Amino acid sequence: MKPSPHDLDSRGSSRPLKNDQPLLKHIDYLYFNIYSYFYRLSHSRPILNFRTQAMFLFSLGSGGWLLLMESVYLKFIKHTRFASPMQSMVFASSIYFLTAAFFHYIFIVKDRDQKIFSKYESIADQNPKQKRHLWISFFILALPYLVLASFAIIFPRPH
Figure 1 (tube, rainbow, N blue to C red):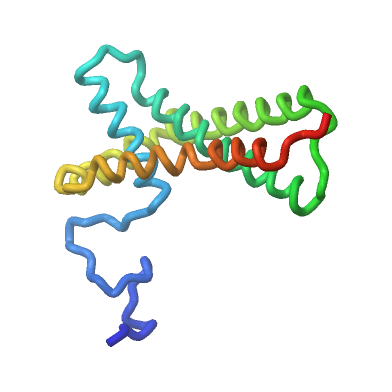
Figure 2 (figure 1 turned 45 degrees about the horizontal axis):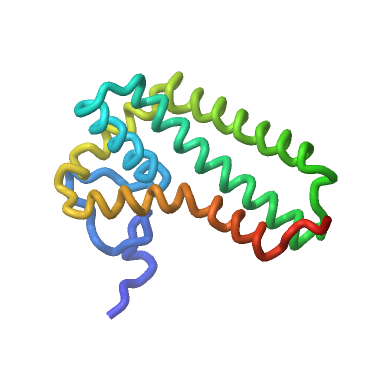
């Protein structure tokens, strides 16, 4: 029997939350997996700043998603490309710089990463599929680059 729409909670799930379980946001949990990996890595190896590394990896993945959306828009909607490779490099560099600056402000300056970590730390300790979730997070961040590389192979630039 399917639950009625008014039986669903704000997550769209009919499964009740436990009293101590926070509401799961997928983007926060994606960032938490990356942050948690670098945090655990900092205990076994001397790394400079795990917070900054997690933030830059997340901004690199987010920048990749923005570049993929821009590439799909230019290729399939506008049916055009950048005039030169230098112009596309400047555009990509500006996207990466802006996403890094934006996420630095959100995660490092506003300490959002600390709030996310404290919110999901108890869930992660009890999660038997923690490694799988980490690999899924890395795949989600790498996926736009795989698609962009396949675009370069499928739709080569005419010379």
